[in-house]
Length: 333
Image (cartoon, rainbow, N blue to C red; front, side, top):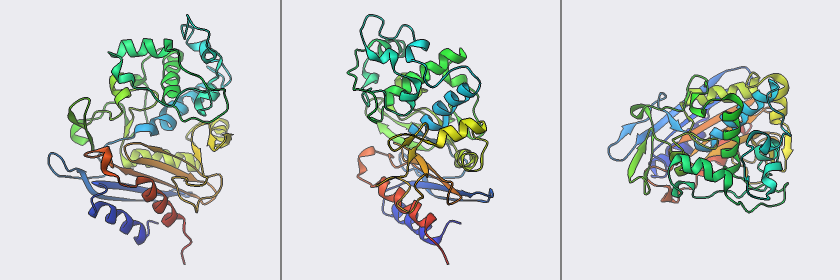
């Protein structure tokens, strides 16, 4: 299931210094799975071998695997509707401003079409309480809705919606086996020597804004093992990730190049050019990714620590992701 050419790609990336380590998992429509774990969990300050039990900082995989999934569960339970306005759940949002943000829908936030900016340095604003208050009152420059602008800010707001709907902080939500918001440092893959926190991050969220918000947010903060993330891919491929109607809605086209939860196959897509047109996937900044191709009956997960010890290595992680996807999907004799 994992061809030798795929192993060779990953070994070359590791031996050439581009990646400390990599964990690959593949599962087919029958549930047959295979995994491959290579290289190191960290190089700095000392070398430690990567194992299947190590936890990776999943970064933006938090968006589909937690935030979007929980919102669609809430829709299925009748707690929210995708076309509800953001202001329905956050009535204090921009309360002294005349802003369209209050009337943007959960659907628009999920699909990154609400018109919000992509990012802001929230971690420079102050403590977590200050950031949580200010992010609701900041006079964001809004685009017209409809254009896809990938936005961490939108998912930070969706995380706040989930907290209001369920009456508890995100870190207290139950998670599937192999996923956690409270990683043990000893079991975690190292990410980066953070210039802001002035330490090597291990078992601590890499994303600065999520770190400043206490380690968990709607856009980042989830950690997972290879087995835990591969199980999510299998549930998406074979059913059971969401109630049937909600799962169908989650994977249908919902905006240009996007479903409610994932990025669709398109030119330059991270899963490679051999995927079927309705294949879906998502990546995380730390070097993680998950892809599902229902038409081909295959799903795969590639977890790396490409930001260790620095994000500025110049390594082409997108090129590696596409190459891995193509080797897995290429016809074999």
